[in-house]
Image 1 (cartoon, rainbow, N blue to C red):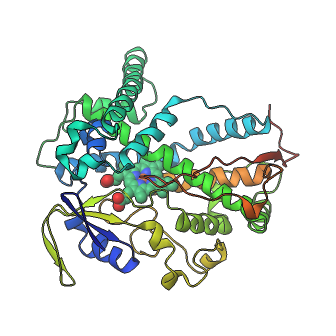
Image 2: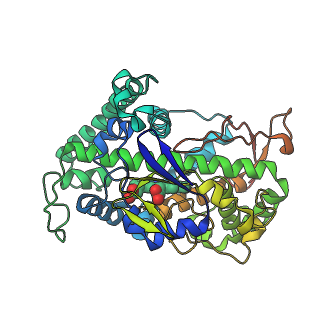
Image 3: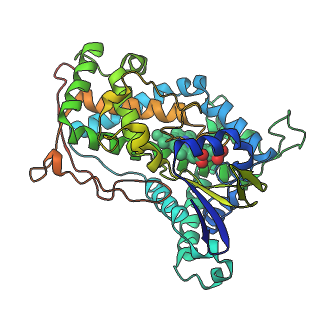
Length: 412
Ligand code: HEM
């Protein structure tokens, strides 16, 4: 479908066949990101990764982030930190009191909502000065608060490095150590990053990691609450593989096939980025007889693709994990029937980390607790309304009551 949004031509992709054509066959032509007012204002002038235009800078930053934090070996290396955090979560749920400690999450939420908002100024630029929707003011406010948080993180790391030079290096240390140096010696453009780039990269990684994983976890838990049959099968699978004398560990995950099916089925129906991040056409091109002008915005409707009855049969809208019994998804750009992580050059580089995180959290929550809905809500009338934007959280908070079920595993 093609649209004219103010002064900006746009195409909406809603079938897996078209997605394959745009994100695989002609991927390089559509690998740009459009510059929007919100991404410029909030994401440090789009100087990070997710909103940076396709080219040598983006390639080098993406390579750096992938090698230093998102590769399988690095993700494995950070396993103990995930375990520690999960223990804290289970303990706090056991005491039935979950506290919100970090304002960062709220800021990330607000930032994503603003980046995903339909901003008139992006389509009719001369309207920008009037800030009719109040979005410029809101973006500047979020940007200022995020900037303060990022400054604190960076300054703390600088001070800690000065005090203890043998400290275990994390991603922020790695970024700081290459500041003002060439980050990619194989790239002839001699790319040097400054403090603004460091903040923009940190911003993109934090925003991309926090909300996506958290939103997916809430959707999966919602589906399990709506489908006690599925919850029971999942709990039995974990019980058989892990027993009830210990918590789930990362090494157990590869044996939990039904868990994979539950996650694939939820990501199909509720992709966290329902329209991915917008792509932009880098040069004019004709596809299947249609002329697409340079700078056309390409919106990929991953939500509609995952619910296409021509691909997923008449029961496409139904939550039925068993449809994945003989279909193992790997999200590495081979399948286009469900694309919760996008595809092609701009696909999500955090797939491995994202999947490990949500698998581990869901396995732990299902294994350690029985879950009930509040007394006035039954599984069939649990509200599953989505709130559409750059990310797609539940429109209404999920309330559920956990009761600890692993009698043999005690916590302090
Ligand atoms: C369940 C978890 C996650 C989901 C569903 C998800 C989904 C996505 C989607 C749909 C995109 C846009 C792809 C496109 O435009 O074609 C994306 C991009 C991105 N994701 Fe993820 N993501 C997840 C976790 C993560 C994590 C854990 C990280 C890193 C710590 C991450 C980092 C990024 C980055 C940096 C981009 C921008 C890539 C670029 O423009 O080159 N994501 N993600």
